[in-house]
Length: 574
Image 1: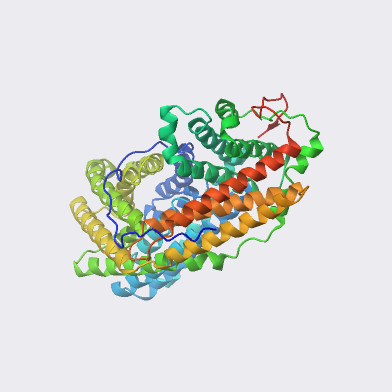
Image 2 (image 1 turned 120 degrees about the horizontal axis):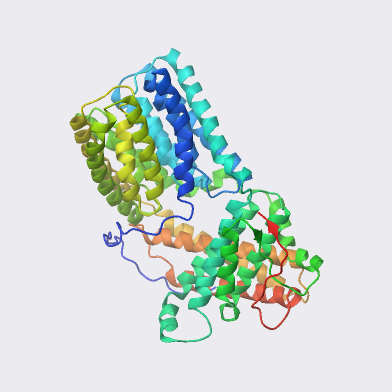
């Protein structure tokens, strides 16, 4: 690897405004979390409404909101993830309720809330649970700290949350009855589309448009490689290789071929496969002229990876220490500042601070702008909705359900847009116990939003992440080791296909990790100059080795000549 001199970078980077509020494309499955949260929240809340006990809705909401998680995971992995989410939610709620039953000292409650928020942030990031991350967990535990409580009430309240959490688990798993391989098929379709986009922009023909596209060649290639890696992770997450998953594995092999030789790929064929996967019919099967046994031999590396031990959780927590410290300090200071200003609900400032912290300070700044804009717009929505919600308890429940749906439907386009619905929903939840003065709620929410965002950003700047550059060095070492392993196998006269495939995916994973680490570090303040040239050289050599492994595999397993394959009539339903 080259020992090129690192390119100096400024110690303090400009914080951007352009694009922070720009709307993106909606998620492919935006309706799934939106419908799931409604299906999870409605039965418990309507039951409490019929019983005249809406004051208990906060506890059932704790369990119901677990339905927001793990929608991109295969169902076997989703079952485990949702179980841990429910247990984590109940554990945070239990700590909050027990603490609230022992003390009403606001400083103590804020301190406990900040500690819980830091733990939740660390665990959610380490396990990569995905959106909505730690924010929902922190909202529930922080709000519960300031709910009047006695120790004798805690078991019943936890039982309500547990029952609602069990229902949320069932709601999250219900789609498996209709489309058991839906998440894996979507992940594979996304990989095929990403590679098709890369192949279309970086083919062999050099038109002016393609020449301009080559300026973004490394990043576009990295995006396609990340999509293929994510699809493999989806297939490997279950630990079981069934016939439908084997069909998807073959498609990912074809995506890897197109990624290695984009000039020989047919983007339209890749997109056609992706469209078929998004349907409910049979998975397409690339046409080959080799025996079925040879095709299965192509994927021997998958079995080796499934047998490999998982990476221990504690090894993933270490690099997250700066983020955890930022969360603890920012949430505590935001809550204390809110108390100093005489706000009666300091947990709103605490939750605002907890919602800001992203992979680096630049992204944290962007999330802060989005949070403030979304919350300010949201209080206007609350002012318009409050008269209707106050008309009848049933109207209050229905308004909350509508806002739950709207939040999940919009938040994928931009965080601020989802916050426009989240803010009035959170304000209405406070009225389940008793109706409150809307003007007071609006004023306190605005103050807490501004205080939480400002103090949270200050804490992010104060708690530096000087290990970001060290993590790049570690990622570079990982890429070099993976590349050397693949190169040794390539040097063999007849490398075993299973180990070669396993080495290929290990190198792809190392390259994805390197790009993510470099992107995270590039947005941090107060650190050494980043080894940008070394990163570029490592990515170039790594992707060349990836292409070589694919070519070697192709020369032994697939027909030579034109790689633009057709589709057989065989397939497996997913």
